[in-house]
Image (cartoon, rainbow, N blue to C red; front, side, top):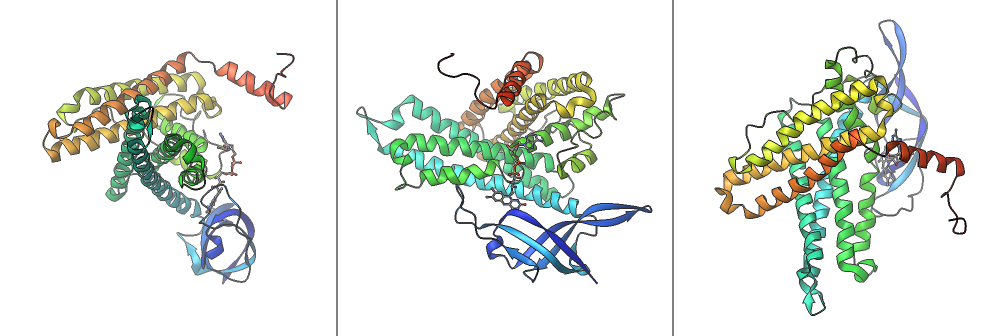
Length: 406
Ligand SMILES: Cc1cc2nc3c(=O)[nH]c(=O)nc-3n(C[C@H](O)[C@H](O)[C@H](O)COP(=O)(O)OP(=O)(O)OC[C@H]3O[C@@H](n4cnc5c(N)ncnc54)[C@H](O)[C@@H]3O)c2cc1C
């Protein structure tokens, strides 16, 4: 017995060199006497029925293959189903949760490389009779790159620990790590190129390639926009269900976002950060207190938002972006707290952890500013004006002014 599969998929990484393919296909299943279409995962060797297109020409990651795959009347034996018939969505989510964290870890590695390259140039290049590393604007870049990379790395460590526990759902955390780390890397490759300046722009050096290679991380494994919607809406699912009368309103918040939606619908979650932090080191009391306050305020703001928008929350993407950004920052802060607490314990106190404490302080200062800004913008913002600008421009199909009319 076998299935016959048909379909096409663009941009499959490494399809050009693959011997095996995992294929997600819609199959008919019967549940309680009702016939439904559900996704099933299959594995197939390279076989008659699979055609792989030429490798695409890309902005970056040119050392990897990216090909279209065409599947026509591919015979797959029934025993090649992975995870059960109709269970493909669960399999895909498992793969994505792992994949996103792997991507975040890769971004951390690349950021660390960039930092090394930037420091090398900061220490060597002399302008205005000084090493450029002595200039405040260069120091600011290096310190920001280091603090952000440390936070991204802390998120990766924390999320891998969640996976190792085997008893918690880490989908939200791995999405937070992916968004945060991919954006940290993008900022870091950009600042590294800026530090290398003219040389950075030249093909003779690898830094323009690093920039091109980094760009894909914000696009694949779920674009950062889709992941922000996912983080916001699945994070709000828990508080929403606790609010009387709103349970139904947000039951299907992600409809229209494809497979991600079904997953989010099934999730019942509280905010990602608990309201009481008991395990941070005493030297970090102020920062832990700040995070606790935010957790409380966040819950209140989410409830207000759900009361205000009700069932329409899934349409309010300006608000979703703020919620997601706060959640990501709070998760990053929690991970930094945890990592620095561990360092303080292991190294034997604050005097041995000057660097870690400075990084934590710097990261919290900036995250605090972002979170405060997002909380304020929930009450007062320019959302209506932004929508008006975008929608009017869609109508015009271009930038609304020409140079003569002003
Ligand atoms: C080099 C490369 C390798 C890849 N490898 C693989 C692979 O191995 N396997 C695989 O399955 N796929 C792979 N992909 C596909 C990749 O995952 C998709 O490109 C990605 O998910 C985005 O889909 P899209 O390009 O169709 O963008 P679209 O979905 O068309 O999105 C366009 C823009 O609109 C935004 N947008 C879309 N919907 C919403 C929404 N609801 N709310 C807000 N904003 C929205 C997006 O964020 C994006 O900015 C690869 C892609 C590339 C470029």
